[in-house]
Image (tube, rainbow, N blue to C red):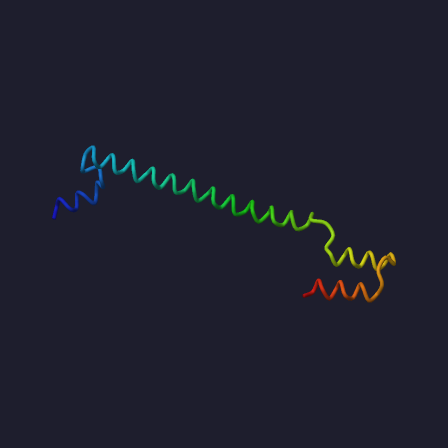
Amino acid sequence: MERMINMFMYGLGHFGWLGMALHLLLSLVVFVGLVLLVVWIVRLVFRKDHRKEAQTTSGPTALDIAQERYAKGEITRKEYQQIVSDINK
């Protein structure tokens, strides 16, 4: 029982070089995991910002173009209504 208590108190260091190797391995796994987590979060945030930017700078929509053409008299009311109907489908 005393040996188990010592093992819990001193951790893997009780096992000598094997304990040090396991401790190093576990430390590396935790460190790499944290780095990957940070990279994933940064990419996720960048992707959302990039999508917002792409949506705001994409230019006029098809409906905007149809409204502009109707306002200029390039298309008739019937043609404009058909375009709007097709867009909303």
